Every structure is written in structure tokens, then in C-alpha cells.
Image (cartoon, rainbow, N blue to C red; front, side, top):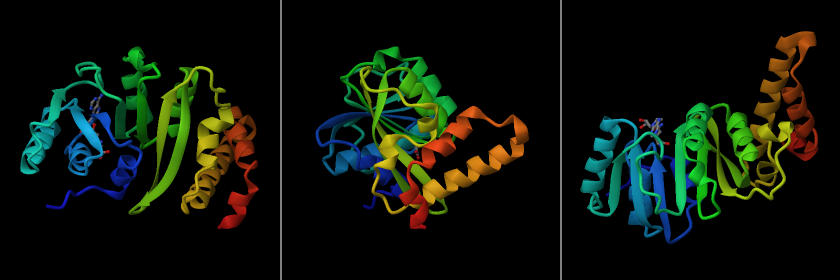
Length: 227
Ligand SMILES: C[S@@+](CC[C@H](N)C(=O)[O-])C[C@H]1O[C@@H](n2cnc3c(N)ncnc32)[C@H](O)[C@@H]1O
């Protein structure tokens, strides 16, 4: 039986290390946990969702794949009602506001024993700002295209000794600049376009963070010239 996993979620799955105990927060259909267990990548999975309907759908899907005994299901707002015994927290398909509120409610995640795999749908710069301000370091970040949209996926560690991101890097962090995905120049061009358009709309008033982001982008002229 085929596990219907989008390219976006397959990319997130690629960040999971073999042997990981995962916690998928906002699991919806549960296919990410199902895929990671079926392919013997994760050794155990916590699947949590704030809403009953998606959680029930995850349970039904797990049953179809014979994995309902291997996944622990929790009705939970973020990580509030799940056990803390896991290695890798996965949170995908949500906006920065939701992700930040989940992290804010769980300062116990500020611990080197956890790794976070985050795929943010909107205002990703605000998520990176929060992470950097709270001692998290974006170790790896990649861009992918799935259908009409470009997405980024990041791997985050708690490391309060790591240098904090600058304001410009909230939009384009060094980890993303190191990415070798073929979609990176397109992501870069789209980001530049949106920043320039937003700044143009502000006229004289400007916006120091967006201006810093454009300055950050100008450090990578090779990306500009690739398209
Ligand atoms: C757009 S879906 C994304 C599902 C899946 N993670 C993905 O990337 O395809 C968002 C899911 O997160 C759940 N959700 C939203 N806020 C949440 C929260 N604070 N805690 C747990 N789950 C949440 C929703 O009920 C929904 O199932």
C-alpha cells in the first residue's frame, strides 16, 4: 500500500535520523509517522493534534497500515499533553505564530537532548527570530518545490553558544545560504522581489529589518546571477 506523502513531507522525513523517537505535532492524517515507521527510520512515534477529527483520521490510517500499536496518539495543544520521551520534534504545515506559541509554552524544549524539524508555512522570519532569541540554532535549512509553492524545512538544535542571527538573517539565514537545492536561486529571487515591493510600498518610512534583509541577500550575488 502506497503512503500518500507529499514531497514537502518527504523532505521533512529526510531530516529524521535513523533510530529517532519522533513526536509529530499537528500530525493531521498521520502519514509522516506512518512513513517513518514503515521505512524503519523512526523507532517510535508520538502523533499529536489539537483537533479530534485529524487525530481520529491519523488513528484510522495507522490501523490501515498495521501501525496503530506503534504510534501513541495524543489530543494536545502543541506539546502540552504529550510525554517528553522523544528525540526529534517535528512540526510542519503551520504558520510562525502557531509554532512560536507551541515553543513558548514548552521551555523544556530548550535542551540539547531535543532536535526540532520545522516547516513553517508563513512569516518564517518571525520563527527564526524566536528561535535565535531563545538559544536555538538553525543548523540546516533547505528549499523545495511542491506543486506551485516553494517551502523551506529547517533542522534546529538548542545551542545557546551559537551566534545569534542578525535581523537580516531572520529572512535569509546562513544555513539556507549554504543549501545546495536547485530551487534556492528561485527562493532567493522571490524573497528579494517581495522585500523590494514591500519596501517600495512604505516609501520614505522604510523598514529597518527588511532593509537589513535586502543587505543580507546582497552578500550572495552568485544566487542573483543563477536565474
Ligand atoms: C495544515 S495542517 C498540517 C498537517 C501536517 N503537519 C502537514 O504538514 O501536512 C495543521 C495541523 O495542525 C493542527 N494544529 C494546529 N494548531 C495546533 C496546535 N497548537 N497543536 C497541535 N496541533 C495543531 C491542526 O489541527 C492540523 O491538523
